[in-house]
Length: 167
Length: 167
DNA sequence: ATTCATGTAACTTCATATGTTACAATTCGG
DNA sequence: CCGAATTGTAACATATGAAGTTACATGAAT
Image (cartoon, rainbow over all chains, first blue to last red; front, top):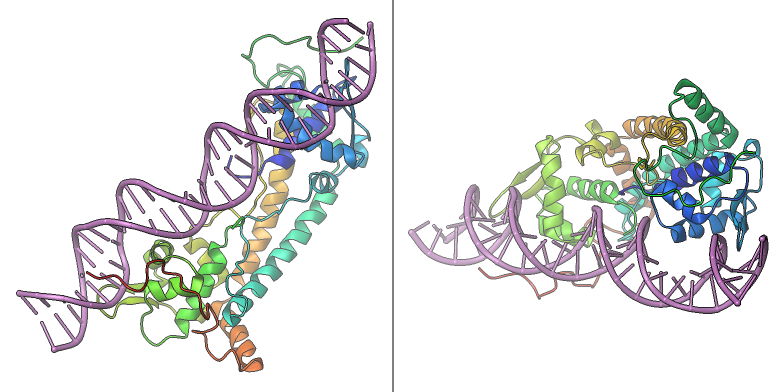
């Protein structure tokens, strides 16, 4: 992957967690994200330390949301994963004493800073509850995608233990 | 370098070229940018194809500006280097059929798209002539940085194997 | 006690941006 | 015409960092 998809991956995971009754294991989440359980743990650990999710060890353990989706914004999650740098372009610092470089960096940084502020502000206006609503609207429109736990890897083998689901 | 500094590097080079009478060799530019002449040629080739700079081969050759700085904006140069992706974050496309992923991607893409538009618009308002003026203001304020062609690498030798090749 | 989880360090793999080498083609100055 | 200087470009090498993997310790449920 050429671009950091951590943010979207984490959002994906969190929305899936919101659909589940109990805790979801790293392995289940990893299957959804087509990645490795350890990768899941690594990134979720940061979110847990900031109080967004809970983890439980041992039998029956896994990950669950610690806060309501309506109290979480994209900005929270962005910060939760460590505020990775937003831009793929930046400035160089090869010749700090060069007046040309200073002029270029000032102009660029100014614009990037403005854009960053606007983008993060807009992240702050989107709650995960809104994303979840959008997800449920999609489901309603396409009943054949019947659940959050399907549609990820239609062909993979067994569904180990599967849904700790529904009464 | 963790972030793509192509844009700032190219701007740096162009402003330096503007200060020179005749063509500037790739090697001279490479020294300024602390990089390799071939890297300079690679990126400048694109700008040349789009009419922003000229190249001349052979003895006495090198690179020169094809247009006045006042007719060039940051946006032109950004496009000139191939419109590299602006953002370090993006979305994933691991599970195209998953409604959660669609909801996440839609929200993210929407905001990123807005931010991109704003940023590029702002790039369009900055001419290289403005950058050059900023550069000259700095020089005036710090006469000890007496010229565009100094202050880059007062001592270090970038070319690994001594100077100049023989034929 | 056994099994199922997370926690985490250490290592491997992979992608890719950047740098380097090599040489052909071109241009200029004698 | 000769030789030095320069770009053009393909091919290869290196470095970096993100992602993935292995291994094993720790903790919890039954």
